Length: 295
Image (cartoon, rainbow, N blue to C red; front, side):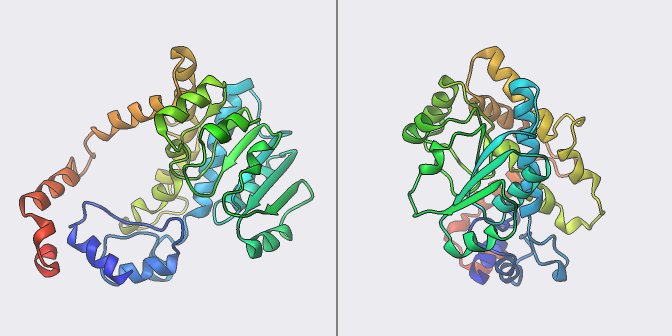
């Protein structure tokens, strides 16, 4: 991780790293020893710490928007299947129960985690330890499927078996083949909320880590509200509405919108990231030794 920190420094800030699957706040502390271009640093070092709970809150906002679009309903009384009950999956389960979910079935590959989780929630929740590659969770008779483990889990086999009417979760890159599997979900009439619409809160929470803290932070909380134009709720409803009106898959529409917004200049820094990358290419960064690349 210290070596990875050296790499981040050499990239001159065009990329800022963060905690994700398989890493921890302690790992980010090691990265931070060698670069300032990292987030999710421990609070004891002035960082934002583990971003999992904010990420779970964003997933809940996406689920609520999808159910509102589906039939005007809410989480209350619905049945859920949650794939993965780790850092994000478990708080998602807890938030669903708080909001009146009728039942939740879940699975994870970590036997010790499953045993720990079983003691933390109520009788509406059932969790099973499964082998890697076990996709039986897709057969669950539920209203909403919530992928919170690894990516590439939506493919022709699993999509054909889904009984849920909504798919919305935290896992990154859920579609094994973006074009093929997006179209397959659309063809089956399953409301798919693209992962990057709803799992943004981890990066939102830590993106401005170096700028200091306001608690609660209005720049963070507005993503979880319903009135702001770019909130998770509003963005999800807009994408689902366009998908219905244009008879097109949701991920294709969301990607188009993301590409449009990516061209908008940062209000303070403009297109500085692009300028840094152009400088790295001009200096043939990949051929330098580490000290020259960092200077």
